[in-house]
View 1 (tube, rainbow, N blue to C red):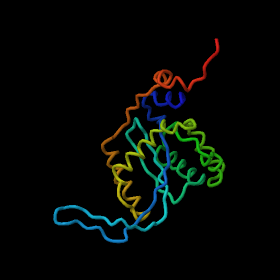
View 2 (cartoon, one colour):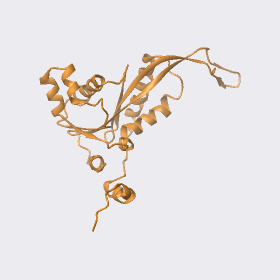
View 3 (cartoon, rainbow, N blue to C red):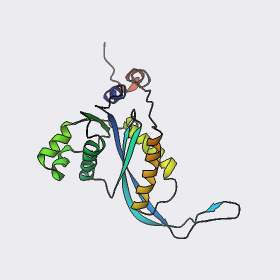
View 4 (spheres, rainbow, N blue to C red):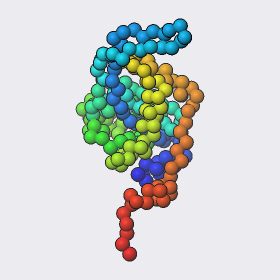
Length: 207
């Protein structure tokens, strides 16, 4: 926990951006009947729907840079994770000397997966440019990307989404608007706060 909090306390450095990463499955649902709006402007949506499968949303958020992107994948595997990690390093931050990546400690997050989809030389270059910082078990609340996923759900995904293409369009419209406004995150919970408010989580030293 303190390792993550110390990362959040760093000053903004474009050569070493702090990037938060999280993923979330979303169900695709289509309408069985077309919604309509009555003469008073009230929208009516039938309760019946059709399941159209699921997609996984990969949230990439830079708290101090006011930047985020969402990559939509068909599923959540170690190879999908590796592909998104490569995208972060090579497409989003190609000129950064080092990228500090805060992520949840999941079994699919395996550096070895990069070697399964890229040459050893390319995989090693990507890994060497990233400092991986994992949140502790039961500590996913420390991941700012999880907060961004919550904002995304509330602001853009509160209705039904029927297809992957529609999902891509919805999330792109959302993060492009957020990026245009340079919406940053002001994280204020520090290591000092944790040692007071979460004192019960620390080992008790015997005199």
